[in-house]
Structures are given as structure tokens and as C-alpha cells.
Length: 331
Image (cartoon, rainbow, N blue to C red; front, side, top):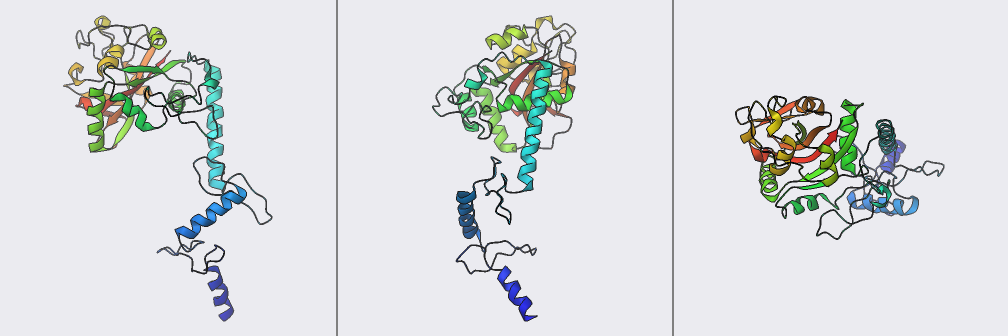
């Protein structure tokens, strides 16, 4: 019995060399290898400097070394599985890109990494994936996106590179529901200051934001919208003749309006709704496609602020509750 207690005590000593403190034990009985954060951090730094850091970019743990001294690329099974799944998703995405002959009208993709942040007044480089340096975010951080909005008086439209993480995320979401479509381009929208500020104010208050989708009528040349990156018509945004930018009926009397250019200029607005001043947004693009028209279709990716968990659709009655972030054009 005494020998057992001696062995037990040895296992309860901090694993860091030269430390004789007992290990930290959680209230539920879980026993850590170290006495506290300080020793754990020091030991981790030593291990990383000795055998290297886990190959998963978001992990800060050292690589795993077995009893025979063999060093693996990851800290454990979890990170290895996560990265394996990411590579599998990437291969599937590349296969879909090839099968659907996606035309993003962007040349020199390999040279887009390493350039500076997309915000005009920012001199920092855009964020680049440390594992796959051909992938990036167009901004150095999220703050730059919102900072630039504060200086805009009109909507800024930018064609998103197919190597941008935003493009990849949106592309994957659409292809899961529409495997046979051909995406012509994804446009990033940065709305004017007055629209962005109102949205951010409500966003900070409610704090629950969902990315949702909104399909609408296009009375302009969507291919030219991709090419020139500016609204292609100045048609009035009026809910007349049964046409509604934010609901059904786009095929009836819709010649005098253009939901796409209207939303790009003014953002989503309740005053053009045929549903008692309410706007509808869908959780899936497969719902929003019902409100589009023509061979080339357009669906907005919209941030929607809500105080509750979003269902298949969200109904709001405040202009500030929605902010158009991207426009997906496909056929």
C-alpha cells in the first residue's frame, strides 16, 4: 500500500523539469500534466523550439513525438483529422471548379497574394493563409473592411478573386445546393457610410448576426455589372405593377425597376416592400432563387441582425437590420 502511494505521488508532480509542485487537478478530477499555466507555457515553448509546432495553422501546440522518438506533423489526432478534412473539401471544390468551368474574370491569381490590403489607405499586406499561400483575405483584418465603409458616399463594388476565402466559402455554399450552376462572378459590396453606420449600431446592440440570402429581379446586364463593377441602370426602385424587390411578383410589370442595381445603390429598404413594410431573407440560396429572373441570376449575401436564432427565413422591419455584403451572379 505504501509503495502504491509513493508511485501515486510521483505521478502528481509537475512534468516540467526542476519543478516539484503538484500538478493542477480540476474540480471534476481531471489531472493536468503541469502545476499551472506558467510551467505549461514554458514546457510548450521548449517543445516547439525542439521538435516544431503542429502543422495545423490555428494550433499552437508542439508536434507529437512517440516513445521511439518519431516526430509527427501534428500534435494529435484531432488536428490531423481537421486538416485532412480541409484538404478533402479543397479537392472537392477544385473538382467542382473544373467541372463547372467557373469564369471569375480574374487574371494573375498567383500574383494576388502578397499585395497590400484592399483598403485604399492601408499599407499593410492582406492576410495570407500560412499553409496555402495562394489563398488569402482581401483585407489585412476585418477592421479594415468596416473602416473603409466610413469613408464611402456610394457603394464600392469589387470583383472577388476565386482564391479569396470569401469566394471559396460562398462558392461552396452555392454548389452544395446548385451543383449544375455556373458562377459568373462574386462581387464584394461595401455600402455607403450612412447605411454601414446604422447597421453597425444595431449590430452592436443585438449582437446576433446571420448570413442570409436575398434573390431579386435584374433588369440590367449582369455580365456588364461584373465587368465594370458599377450599377448598370438608373431605373427607379418602385413597388409598382406587382413588382417587388423584396418578394414575389418580379415577373409581373417589372420592366420599370431593377432590384439588383437598386439594392446596390440604396441597400435593402422596407419602403419598397409589398409585405407591410417587412423584408424577407432566406437561410439557403435555394429559397432565394425563387425570387430571381432571367438566364443570368443574382442573389445577395446579406448580414441580418436578429435577436433570435434564425430559421429557414427571417422577417425584419428595419433597414438597419440588414447589410448586403456580396452579390453572386450565376446561370
